Structure formats: C-alpha cells, structure tokens
Length: 161
Image 1: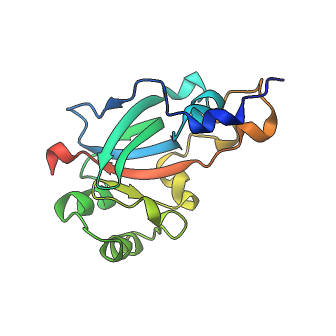
Image 2: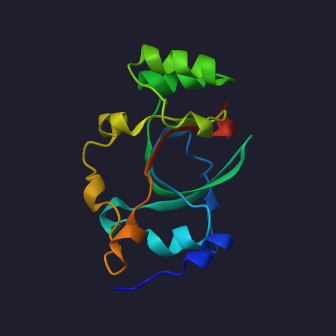
C-alpha cells in the first residue's frame, strides 16, 4: 500500500483543468473538487466513467472539478428554471430546488451563479448508473486516503446565460 504525503495538501494542483467546452450549455456534474496536489494524487475515477478535468470560473473563484459531466438541456425542469431565471442568491436557489423536490442543505456554501450544488441524496436521480462505492479506482493507497467527498452540481455555462 502506498502512502501519499499529507504535505501535498499545501501544494496547488499541478494538472491542467480545461474550461468548459464552448458547446457545453448545461448539465450535471458528479465528482471531486480538487483543492490541492494531495487531492490529485488520491483520486482516480474509474476509466469507464470517462471523467473530465474542468475548471469552472465563478464568483467564488475558480473551481477545479474532476468527475463525470452529463450534458442536459432545457427538457430537464431544473436546468430549464436555472437557465431561464438564474438565481442570484441561495434563498431563491433553495426555492427552485424545493419546487423540484431537491435541496442543498449540506453543500450550499458552493453556491455560485452557474454552479449550483445539490445534496448527494439526489445524485441517483441524474446518475443512476454510477456506483459511488466503486467510483474512485485508486486501490493501491491506504484506505483512509481514498475517502473524499463527492459533489453533485447542476452547471450552466456562463457563455450561454
């Protein structure tokens, strides 16, 4: 078993994260927020999910995201509401989520126009095919280092707002 040096948490991510493709309008993301080099070393999403490394620039600064991005259009009620009337504060966003039988009680701190957090309890509504227990394929490191919070976001590309 490999031990990843915890001091890597003090180093910024080293890999390239691409901005959203200009053709991507809206959809859902499931995966990890990469905050440092330690995160990059300990997370490796199984190849079958075709994970992407993207950077999403928001009011809260750039988010480095590593995970599965699923494009969804306005046929999805939540995406339609977020695109038509983008909420500018957490109160309005929570109201939209409640109308869609969703919430962001556990992740609201990541709210930013264009990047909309959704509680993981609802992850399987959009990603029924993903088994979170087998999401991180990195098995050669110590088990406690594999643990990381998986985030679920609705994403609206700013270029189309």
